[in-house]
Length: 300
Length: 294
Image (cartoon, rainbow over the protein chains, first blue to last red):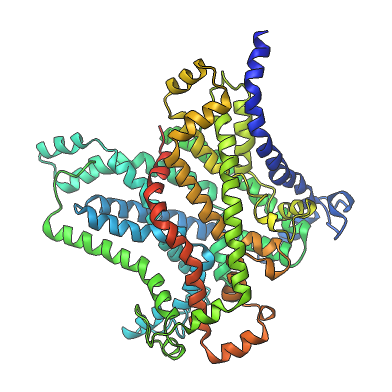
């Protein structure tokens, strides 16, 4: 009796979940079933039920692709550099903002540096393609004034990965600083008072109070970014790259797009995507375990 | 508010302020420069005389852009997807966040459903299977392709569920004592107390819908169904000659491609700039809530 009463009390909860469950089954779980395409030669119009099985042929094809290791390395390199810069710059900026005594100045700077986070990479690509152009861009114009020859930021494959890192930091450092700033304001002010009593210098305060105070947040966010090591930023790179910079700028996601959407090799593209999903899942699993251990982080 | 006890020495303080001001300028400059370009004459833009202020002020680029039916149409599609998509996002977020915010005693299947949704963030079928499913469900080239497949923002669900859980239990218990069911507790007790996070999430999904470009690009076959960001992607970033009409080609001879690009980019930014003041008021609280709870 009690059980039935309990169940009837739970019915509205199931009703609330139903539309979302259906949606997620169709658009998130059904594509997971579609992964079988990685083991098929997908024929146009036949779909996953009519196409022939080819075992691991698609994976063998990928391994024979001359640029596959390069693409993997490009992905890890760009994502790794972004992750590192994505911790260092926001932490530094948060520390600097925390030193500002004028609230008006602080708020003005924050308002400006948060904004790029909310602009899409299509808009930002439009802006960067213009200002970074070697012939008419304002950046090279300024460099020219101090005697530096034009740099082809988006067309030189030695410079391109760095352009990606810098423009990504430009877009995200302000918003990234919010979390660290919040952690800084959570530090117990009496710690500083005690330190001042003991005659601690400013630098000593930073070293022994401020940094330990936010280290939990730093460890947590850098560990979690491990799960993104194969996400080098599709939106950004897709909108800014060109065949000129494939050597250093082509990443897994852009490769999947070109193989799958542009060349209709569904089987091969799915196989590459599967590889990425599996590796990412493993890394996320490790990252969450580590974050739980080191920073006591839980999602729920 | 926690203020550092010792103020920075004079010169260090000055340096600190100067570097921060410089960072602010670095963030603002590309945007201001684009605005200046869009209001400058073609010849001024071409000769590199524009920095942060329009040179030979003209609204020619805007006239050209706003007379372009394709641009206007895609702008309308973007507005439509925000007006339809964002409320649907919020409705589903609320309906999922509530059950997941219950205790295990109250909802025994809670953990199962939590993982059911969370797994879709951790693992996905990848681009191609996702595309195939959307094609199988008949959404290709349909407006609803921009709305339905992404209608449940799982990350927002996590934020809202955590927020619901931080509301004192006594309030719900009192309501339950008076005979309130789950629907009443959700709509009469929790939601009225949650408006700051609801405002934050609404602004997030609004911005997300406005900024989406990839779904439009691959799910719409005909460019006249593109939302604005997909349209800009094909016209400004990755110009496809097939997209240009004869009128465009003729006019582009007369006015600068560069200033019209700037004008289109700026128009696409305007809605974000309009919601930004509201956004900024709430997102700091929202981000703190999500990132460092408990």
